[in-house]
Image (cartoon, rainbow, N blue to C red):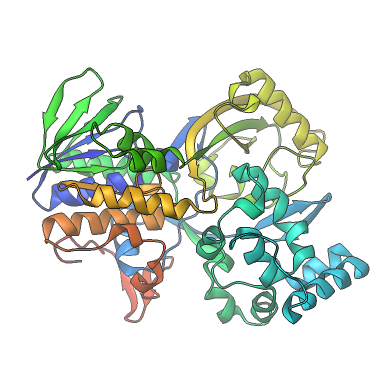
Length: 490
């Protein structure tokens, strides 16, 4: 079986490696010059940094076993500290009631509590025309807490009002968390650990997140697979509703028995000559959000203690700041400076996306001083990375469009779509790795996993097995390395 995998992000890289090891002949195509996609790492000013914060955490034993087989012992357990920056104060994240009350003050805390009780009583009536992120959060935290801690950040990220953002985003990311659950969790470490939102330790590769996918690429090549970097794919080729191969950027075609695509779903659909009008129309309604990351090299080793901060202050354009000095020492080595990654989100036609690097560095530097995150320390260097189509926008009603597109994709044989881009799903690394594993199982073992359902039914795949300092801990007790399972035996 000859398989083409389009895209070398977490999902595509995982699928390619598993398929090659399982006996398929696999070619991996990547438009950029790097593997890892959004989860890659870069070398900068003698240090190593990720494209923003990339925490790895999963309770699925297959995902953890696979990840550990790649990373081996080259990881450390990181004690997570992430906070919300709002009104020149730092709030614990996820919200902890006692901390929030202390910093908001007695009056504001009382008003937040009254707003929550009003919501519980049923006197607060949602005004949205359909379930939205705004109504979802308001029902669980009250209107005032929503406006304080959720509204500004979410609208920075998505670029649309919260009452136009689907409640599926909240259900996927916040799950069953609520103010009442936050209060209960603050008195129970075990209850807190049941929420991925509350996880306070995670495994992190000593060579940066990108190390995982660089090693996968090395293993893939060693197994006989071919990685084609800087090799954009124009479209997927079909004959009578069966995928037969791919068309390269130069117009040449290559034939394959199956294609696994992580290219943006919208681009994939537009490449089909005979896609029905309703499918093309639905695809045109699906939008991605871009990211601009400004890296600042600050002449200090002790700025703040968080791995990353969420910037909820509406007067700051930045949405998140990552401090790579607080991850693992291997990232900075002997360097005596701190690299911060200042993130902003925008659309392709926004001024931010089209601004010069110098302008973006100046703006990020000014905001870090305004927020008093770097004091009077000297900023030695700046570097800008632009990432197109990072976040699939879950605008209200988007699922209707996804259903139309998915129905068309399912009608084609020989094609699998996975990943954040490919399936238009806001995946974490663990979700993407899982879809790669299951895609390989579908082809190698004639399984029938419905990959469109990963994220919506992801909890059904989890069996509460966690990574510890020495391997896995779960129902079978502590399990040491090696932990590799082939796709055929997972």
